Figure 1 (cartoon, one colour):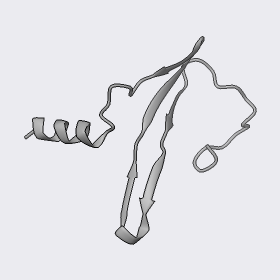
Figure 2 (tube, rainbow, N blue to C red):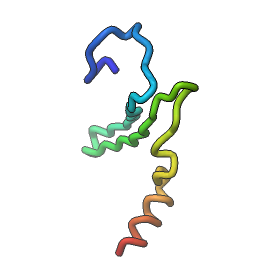
Figure 3 (cartoon, one colour):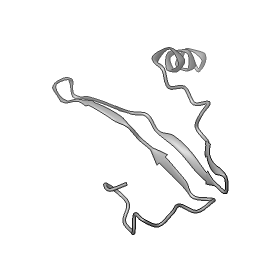
Amino acid sequence: MDVHDVGDYSTPLKPGVVLTIEPGIYLTQENLGVRIEDDVLVTATGAEWLSGRAPKTTDEIERLMRARR
C-alpha cells in the first residue's frame, strides 16, 4: 500500500472496505509487463475474494478470448 495509499498503516481495515492485490512482472528488455489484479472485500469475519472466478492462467485467458470471437 506504500505506492498509492496514504494514512496510518497501523489502523485495522474495517468491514466493507474493498482493496486490490496487484502483483506484477515487468520484462524491460522485452518492453512487456503484466499485472494480475485480485479484489478482496474485508468482512467482519475475515475476507471475501471477489475476483476468484476471473481467469488467471494463460490457458484460461486464451479460452476466454476464443469464446468471445
